[in-house]
Length: 204
Image 1 (spheres, one colour):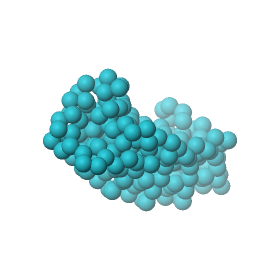
Image 2 (cartoon, rainbow, N blue to C red; image 1 turned 45 degrees about the vertical axis):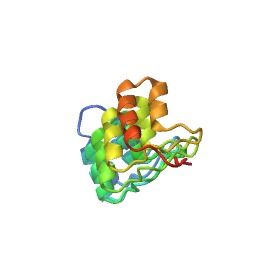
Image 3 (cartoon, helix red, strand yellow; image 1 turned 90 degrees about the vertical axis):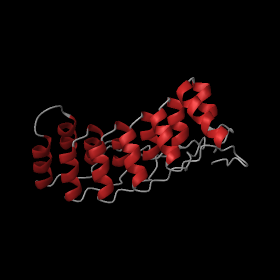
């Protein structure tokens, strides 16, 4: 299936026809590269929904991860391919399966600024307040660090813990301030003034 990987990655052309033919003649649909990339992972990364659909239909492992723990859903969320994210979750991909460091699809979508992907994952019940293994940072912390105010606003509206802190004791407001994102700081400061924390939860 290494040939299929090349065709999935190649710009232009009929990716689906080639992949379909290779599967029909017996190519292993889940064969991975040395780094763990499978044909489904590459198709999700490139946003080739038709190839993703076909590979899932013929039984490709939806949650097979690369060496660093990234799944097809994770990479689609990272790249902002909403149609691929939606399809993978509809066919049962694990919405909260994290990379080895604990970063989930929701966290990476929040960090990259993909509001539509964040909205979809939250709508289907992705964990909003889970933290990474190393720092305890949440999707809200990730969005605040990168200055994505619309995602910060959305996550708080949907129940993300605005006062929760990382293992080092930093809340989203602190992270946004240290990163120089004034619009996020103003929004989070207003939230804090309206709802001061009585006991700030620490994640992780």
